[in-house]
Image (tube, rainbow, N blue to C red):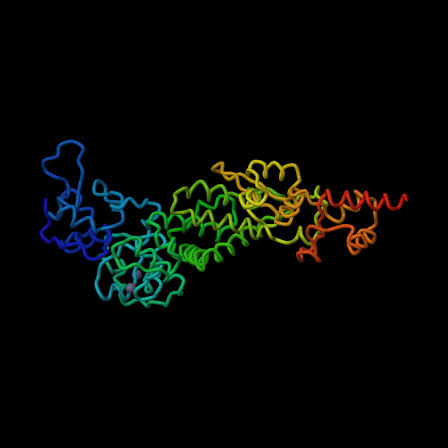
Length: 438
Ligand SMILES: [Zn+2]
Ligand SMILES: [Zn+2]
């Protein structure tokens, strides 16, 4: 049955707010009285209530309403855009006092768990009444009024942070992709769909604010304060990509001591690392995985392979890491061979498999360079000493006298390590030893 007063949905209005507005305008003291009227008369079994029956507006008109309808029996339903219920605040009614003063209706973005601020007025949303101090819940009170009778539009609005404003602006533009695009973060973030952005926020925010292992369960997330913390942490992680994200990884890494986690990546990052690969498999999140991998490559100095003594402490400490793929290219070998060399300790590197089974790794650049030298059949000065039994001084004299020609070195091409072709070295040794005999 149609209601007497059937206003059209307002711009960006929430579904739940619309039902409450209909109920108030038609003189009901609770929106639940709308429910029996919303059931189509000709339906005998499997009764379903709908706003279409209630208002007579077509699906296209009603489809602009976002967010779930909850607590209203047969009229209850999920979001028309399939954004999961966990991302909507079904406990408290948030509001921007300035928006309410302009026009009294509930904006859908206020209903999102991470909708913590009004990006238009750059103020924090509120979910409380300044007079009675209670949280504003979805009750029978007309929209914009606390159940104590206080008009919420007259509550004070406090300026929000710039990062929260950037975040909610991105949130709003992904909820309404047709609106003018805003790009406070990287284009990859701006390209995320609303449910993806919310999933990412839940993940990053949860790890940033909590230390416990099961970070994906968050008590109090419906409370504004908790949501604000998660939004601020996410905005920080997404800013100046990937630098903000790397700072977050630094923080996560600090929670585990390196000694305890050894060279094992999962132990180092806890569940963050498998979750990252398991929960964000879409191509649109490749920037996230790449951000993580570049951090591993550049920053993470796990325990190095101590078996290999050829390398100075300085070069072990240097963080010049290259990927397995790059190493394979330099060495003209397959990546599987590079892995094998790392496993055998012939190259200094770290290997790990992601939760999705993807194998990743990094190799110390110096170790690759030295291996490349060995491959070219060149011999270092130390090795030449061993082969010839000559002192370093004697080898330098041979070099100076022109008996021995270096292939590479400070006097040849400026390369810091002297290197010789094996044949040339053997010839010089033979000649020198021959000379000594005569
Ligand atoms: Zn506002
Ligand atoms: Zn009140």
